[in-house]
Length: 104
Length: 116
Image 1 (cartoon, one colour):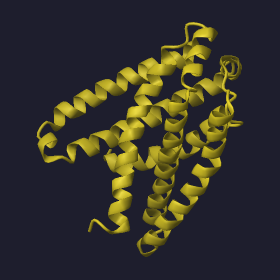
Image 2 (spheres, rainbow over the protein chains, first blue to last red):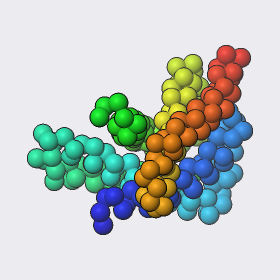
Image 3 (cartoon, rainbow over the protein chains, first blue to last red):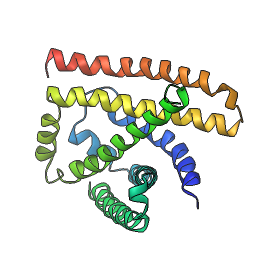
Image 4 (cartoon, rainbow over the protein chains, first blue to last red):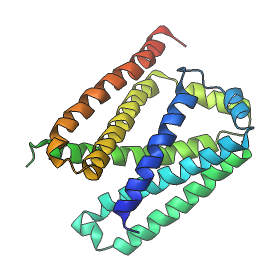
């Protein structure tokens, strides 16, 4: 799939997830507390939502980083290496983030 | 070319995008590494509510809001084939973003100034 298409699809997903995130986590302002999040996280539906959010935001962000980096002529020579490093970062961040969500 | 709204939105989109992806990785690490106990989490949360981080938080809010609305603008222009409207839409994005950053940023500033 072309990166352009990935960005469009994940962008729409992120509009939904980001709105949910802003309202649920940051509104009303400054009342983030471990217990509030822990209570929400007892519901498995929230865990699924958080993991889908994590997946789409990593895909969107890292695909974007790849495009920005390989836009530079000097970097585009190492396109495959850049892609490899970004994929490894993505897998590591997704694993770390999912474990965080699951074990909460 | 460098004075067109097209170039400005391109540059802002890249700048905010790069900043946001770096924040994202930090964010994932910070949350994941502070879950040993509720105390550890709240302690780190307190640290992140210092003045410096409050100001950075407003910058983060601005980056997220601008990037999101500029993205909506691109999707609209692309799907509805309204390239001739893209400039007006860019100004709308700027106005909407400014209003939302003020609406979200003022409470953050008040929180910072009035104490914790």
